[in-house]
Image 1 (cartoon, rainbow, N blue to C red):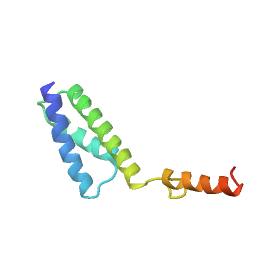
Image 2 (cartoon, rainbow, N blue to C red):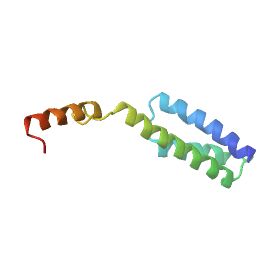
Image 3 (cartoon, helix red, strand yellow):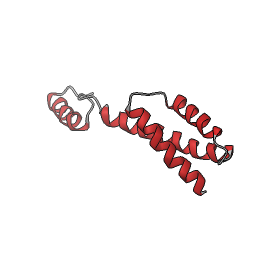
Length: 96
């Protein structure tokens, strides 16, 4: 398990650095990292798979959460505008 954790940390650091420099295809980056690690005889394919599955999962989850933060609800659908708009519509008799 120590090897898997070490592969995970090193791979996450290496791939994060590539992402910072503009690479965007996580699948491609993970495939390239897998090939690098397979060239090493100190780890098994199973250890590589365990680590890289976790790295890919974590990078994709980070990407999803980052996109959600960068793309908030549109102003017309945001909670802070929806409630006042509904109140105005109710008051004017035009509530749906």
